[in-house]
Image 1 (tube, rainbow, N blue to C red):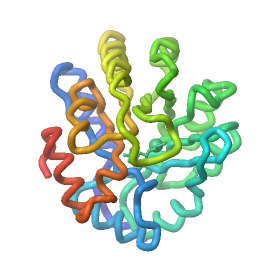
Image 2: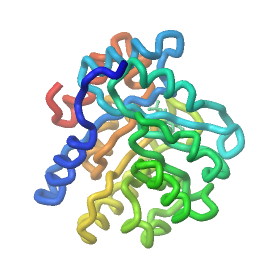
Image 3: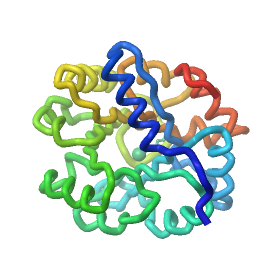
Image 4: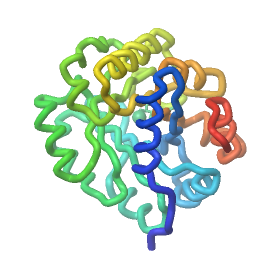
Length: 246
Ligand code: DX5
Ligand code: ZN
């Protein structure tokens, strides 16, 4: 049975309004990444973070082809959604994303992002994602220039900027990628758009402020939450570092 919980979309609406009215001050949502979560008690690990305020979880899908690793069956989300109230942000690190998108037509999936480097027809993929009632986004790897997305900004609900090479948790954030976050935030403000600016990879206690100050509005963090002795306290601590009450 679904538990009653916070409204992720309500949060986003408020967040977007704040960004538009006050471009220099914004808030960001932290999304714990389940790649680093303990799979022997996954539901409990999520519920513990929900009790600490988490409402959206990042879910990595890897196909062993686009990236050299495997993760993320939709069946895990199907099972989880019976006992948690949060929603999922799905990050498809797969070739042929058009084949994978329909597998994530699940009630608790809020958003799906596909790699610019993997999609053969990005507008068609966005359409497929939206036809399932999900927010559609594009992801770019560290070597892909942000300017390659210039023509896409008006068509996305979220842009996910990789700050590590995709495939593994626990890597160090690539500092050069901070400029991409700044560029994305600057273009978004200039164009008067309100898509989410997501950042993924190497976000920890000492780097979260960098990505937040650069303009991130949805921040993924895996090992800095789940590999700490008390993940709920680690989540609260990261929130405090970016000015969220926790
Ligand atoms: C990496 C994944 C990330 C990963 C981040 O390819 O896309 O979502 O879980 O892990 P940390 O926060 O440990 O860098
Ligand atoms: Zn990810």
